[in-house]
Image (tube, rainbow, N blue to C red; front, side, top):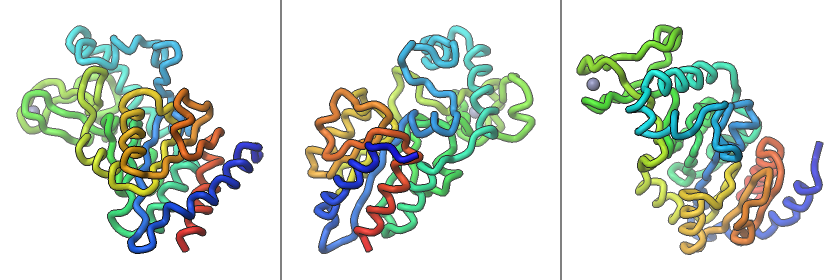
Length: 261
Ligand SMILES: [Zn+2]
């Protein structure tokens, strides 16, 4: 099922030839958001009704919510964590890891707003989870961070204690509303240094995505957007491809690989 948007997008790809440097390898940065996870069936917060699977964001995704009712917040994330085994990377995730494999070492950075593990399971290696990871938990007392995905961690909604200091309940390693995203300096550097910036499955008009797009543009990067709906700032992109990431990205990546060869 190839939509008209893909055909139009392919004709635009010719402009990509201008972004390949003649004297060094191409550098690519990618920002992904909820859209690419939603295509794999991940239950995501997309903001339309301010609810996440029936929960108010203030209740389950803020530091205040954790203080007020940590049992409710923990149960919410335990459900998300258990659901990871029920979803698989889609062809959009796989296309991005294929692109990374074709590039010089150190020239590809994938920044994701998603907290699932679909990019790493799809094979992406240089990956920044700016909003945290469902697989991880963190002790608020000693800051010890660890993966907690064994069956003993997931079988119920009991709190997990810290193996380092014994604190009775670790928190999800998730950036909640009002908290600073992880690795901002590192990911901004990747965006500023890139020749080509791909923004996938995110509206691009909400901070921090909008800020990163602005930084990429002002540093001269060629910016390409992919989303089901055009964002308000669609005119800022050099190219915008409307549709499913799982349909658009394999075609786009193949075109880019052909150009790089
Ligand atoms: Zn601890």
